[in-house]
Length: 484
Ligand code: HEC
Image (cartoon, rainbow, N blue to C red; front, top):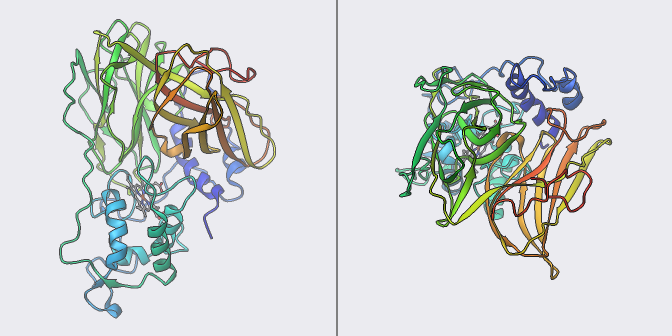
């Protein structure tokens, strides 16, 4: 049996509720205390924000199965040489080893390179062995492993792994003495050779002032969102040229999103727990393991507003399910910007719909069409889907003036894994953009809104020329609206 979606939400909810507490601005709607019961159903939602008790001893990196001491011979009945069979290892190591290897990274909770662990009860579903849960997650519609933006496991490899799992995960001959090293993730590439007038590092930190160098102590939580506020050093509009990840404690950082927010609700150096909701904020860049630097094309700069009106928000998603007590983090983003503007300016555009009333339980599609008024081509660089917890999928099609459609993005959505996708495409005069969000609704009246129990359906699209895809207004009523 596949874990039902409701259970998944229940697991996520613990983190969300914790992330919410005391977080949002004064006018925000507090979480409905009923929400856990409403979404998760009986017994599904934990009542506290406490993280689930880690299966592993707090300071060990790799959880060992309960009745299999780490130093015991791997699997006596199958012979001393036997382990994860080579053909299985050849699937797991390159696709999963970066995170699920001997050094657990990027929030991965468990090793996948050890037969005893694969046969032991899984963390999320202790009634089933981990290898069975692996099959589910490789094949999962909305929370696939590896997580986006990494490629999905191809059908033939999935079939081979499934057959092995269904056979009871038999031991086999390992690949060789030297296990293949996992592919290197290079999340901190050398700085691009760009003309950075401003070369700024925005990083997680522990104190509450701008120059603080102390690391941020990452809580023992499965999903923790911390927002760090920074005032940019420029007092005029500038062009952002690149946004590069800085990865510090790679055991626990999961992904980050960078926003600019209008207004001055927070001071330079402030931070607080937050839950992915930012009024008056625009997404600027994002990174998840497997993703690359956000580098603008040579003749394009991304519009970044002045410090007179805007602050940066760096929202870092941590996953400390493994229970590292010593997780102190200085991850973040390095922003390269200049006031010497390039010939073209790109900006964030909002596609989607705000027409989201839903009542009956089940799957709902909601679509919005943006018909921009264009004189020339528009160049799309990236797409970042954004919904709340019921969102499971987002698709944007370019409907061509002359007939036919091209897919801009067609991707599963997971609230806990919101990522920026490179989606290079050109939109021509007469074309329109149709965005469809798919929701799994638990039933009951809900609609558009910023609260955690409301829903959203946006595709944040970086494109140039700046503003080309905006017609203004609300997406709710006008069929041809392209908000902002
Ligand atoms: C970029 C890092 C990364 C990569 C690559 C990755 N994972 Fe994960 N994995 C995670 C994180 C983070 C979690 C915990 C959050 C979650 O469950 O989504 C996780 C959780 C899991 C779980 C849940 C364990 C449980 O007991 O519930 C399974 C199963 C899993 N991954 C399998 C895989 C497989 C199989 C691959 C390769 C095909 C893979 N992962 C690749 C980061 C990664």
